[in-house]
Image 1 (cartoon, rainbow, N blue to C red):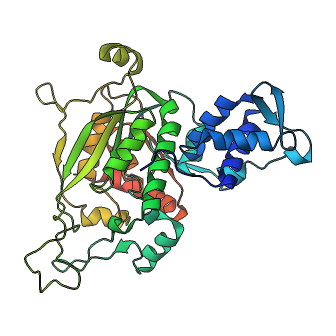
Image 2 (image 1 turned 90 degrees about the vertical axis):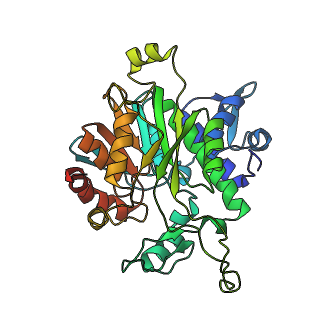
Image 3 (image 1 turned 120 degrees about the vertical axis):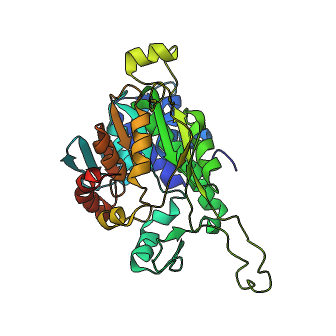
Length: 377
């Protein structure tokens, strides 16, 4: 898979115009290229340079060698919402948690540097499954990329996305998105901040590679031991003929990728200055480990927060607690869903911020966070 994914001329154009409009000052070509990469992912520098050169002085004005700004006059005007979006940002305070309705990349661009001390998030594993068209199919119970598994032991199982259906171009989009996400995220993290990201065995290598290229340090992988309904099936349409064959192993674990923003100096120096750089121990005798036995999410939690990717509070509270080694700082969940990570932070006593773009899940989270936080585990 190539690091640089071919972008449409319109996407590159909108990114350049948005960057120069927001800066309010002339920028060098290298600055523009760097910001275009942050905004839309790895992009050919020649595409950026060609667009600047071919559209000067009609759209851009050169204010020096290799330095550009937007030309004055009507031809240089640009509405930056074409690339940044037009959704109204809403914010709700729920105890120590702040829930924000916004696109996470847009919100990350507005956040102050060195303001987040840890990230714990369960993002869309393959992105496509939470596109508008697929979410509509999910909510209508019609499937699409979502597999509706059969009832088990008298209980209807939650839908599961079929990532084996993703095309090569969708996998390229996944890589580009997480590279852009990492580039947006890195500046707002304090040095030594932990980043824990839920993933899927089929896609975790793509997410990990993109985030490392964006500048985060890979620090291992946390294994959540839990039985799922993924895998273990016989060949479709030939299950009788090959009744002793499973196409894939039955999944019995979930990977959580662990990253860290590079430290300032030694671990002890970073801990003293920023309060980050390691994990909070269970006790003086017992360190935080990278294998956690877990169970499927309880029915009471699903009733409070019916989200297809809801993780159990018993598991989330352990990793949220460990993510702030000195018990101080702000936890971020940029893909908040129904608010389970924020609820876990509230139960532990940490300050948290969550960002969710879907209006249905945002409204659900407003009511679910305090109720999930009150549950005993």
